[in-house]
Amino acid sequence: MTILLSTLNARYTHASLGLRYLLANMGDLQPATRLMEFVIGAKPADLAERLLAHEPRIIGFGVYIWNVEETTRLVALLKRVAPEVVIVLGGPEVSHETGEQDITRLADYVVTGWGDVTFPALCRQILHGPKPLMKVHAGVQPPLQDIVLPYHLYDDDDIAHRTLYVEASRGCPFKCEFCLSALDKTAWPFDLDAFLGALESLHARGARLFKFVDRTFNLNVKASLRIMQFFLDKLEAHPDDPVHAHFEVVPDHLPEALKAAIMRFPQGTLQFEIGIQSFNPEVQAMVSRRQDNEKAADNIRWLHQHSRAHLHVDLIAGLPGEDLDSFARGFDKLVGLGPHEIQFGILKRLRGTPIIRHTEACGMVFDPAPPYAILATDRIDFGTMQRLVRFARYWDLVANSGRFANTLPLILGDAPFANFMALSDWLYRRTDATHRIALDKLAALVGEWLRQTHDEEAVNAALDGDYATQAPRLHVRQKASDGAIRRQAQHGRR
Figure 1 (cartoon, one colour):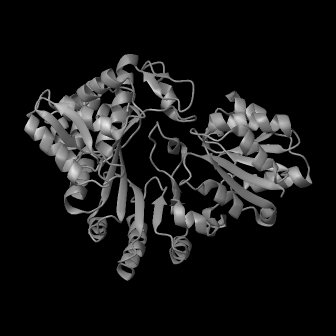
Figure 2: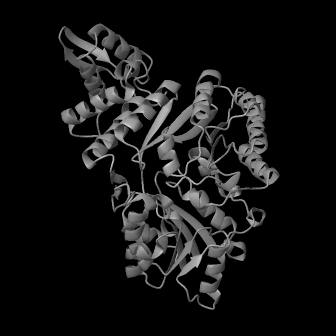
C-alpha cells in the first residue's frame, strides 16, 4: 500500500464524503490508495499502529474543526515513530490561517481548498518527482464535469449502517459571514443526469437514507423538483421500503411548485434543515445575510401546517450586534412557528470566515481552542453566554429529544425563552452538570420544577402522557406531597 486516505469522524455513522471524492479521483494511483476512517476518541498510538501496518509512503488526513486536536496528536506521533512517511493535510480547518497552526507545522504538505485534482497531482510528485518545493498547495477548482463522482465507493457496510452524504451542487451564492461558504462566488451544479444515475445505483444496492450537503438545495427549483421526483418515484414503487431524504433549504424561497412536491411526501421520509440564524434585520445586515424574515416565517409555518416533513431550524447565539433580548424575541417567534427541532447553536469562529472583521468593534472574544466558540461580545457578557451554552444543552435533552412532548408546552408557556432559561438555570443549580444526566433523574427534576408554578395534577398528567407514549418504558419515581407518582423517560426520538 502506497497512499492512505484517513480522517477521524465525529461518529461511526458519519461516512467521509471528502475522502471518497479523493479516492475516486486518484486516477492511475487509485489501485495503490486505500481509505481508512476512524472515530474521535481512539488512542493516537492505536491509530498510528493501524495506519503503519499498511506500510504507507503517504498518509493524507482530512482535518476539520471537530477532529483537529486529536489529528494533531496523531500526526505528531507518526512523525516521531515513522518520520519517513509523508503527511499531507487537507480540509477546511487547515485551508485558512494555515501557517498559524501546530498541525500544519508538523506535516510535510498542506492542500488548501478543493483537493480533487491537487491532491493526486501532489502525490505523483512525491512518489515520482520532482519533489515539491512548496509546503502549501492551493487546491485547483476544476469544472465539476471533470470530477469523478464517488458514490460507488460507499461499500455495503456504509449502506447498511451509515448516513450516506451526497451533493447535487457545491458552493453557495450567499455571503453569510459566519459560514465558510461566504468565500464561494456562487453555487456550481453537478450534471444532474449523472448524479441521479449515481443515486439510482445506491438505491438499487439498498441505500435508503440520503443526506444532502448542498448549502442551498432549493435555490434551483427545476433541479430540486427533479431530485424530489426521484425520491417520490421510489416511494411510490416501494411503499413498504421507503427512502428518507434530508435537505438544507433556503428559508425564504419556497415557490408553489416546490410546495406541491413537498406535500406528496409521506410521514417520516423528508427532513428539512432550515437556517434562520437570527430574525433581527440589523444583525442580519451586519453579517451580510440576505433573508426576507416574513417570507421565511410564512414558509416555516406552511411547512408545519401543510407538510409531513420534519423541520429542523437553526438559530445562532452570539452574533455581532445581537443582545439577549433580541435573541429571545427571535427564539420565541421561532417556537411559535412550530418546528419539530430548534438547533440552538453558539457562534463559532471558523477559520477563514469574514466574521472576524467584527472582533474589535463588537468586543467579540472567542475560545482559542476548537471549536472556537464565542465567549463574550459587547452585548452579551461571559456569564450570560455560559447560561446560553447551558440552555442549548438542556434544550437538546428536553425539547429536541422528543421525550417531553406533552410536558414541553407547560414548560414554555407564553414566554418560551424566559421560561426555559429559568428551568435551565435551576437545573444547573441543582445538578452542576449538563451532561451524563440520567433520563429518570431529568424527568424527576422537570416535574419538580414545574410543580413550583403549575397545578400538580396537570403536571402529573403531562408526564404520565409522555410516559405512556414512549417505549421502552422507564419507571420514574419521585416523592411528591401526596406520594409517589410515575413519569416518563425514553431512549429514542419520536
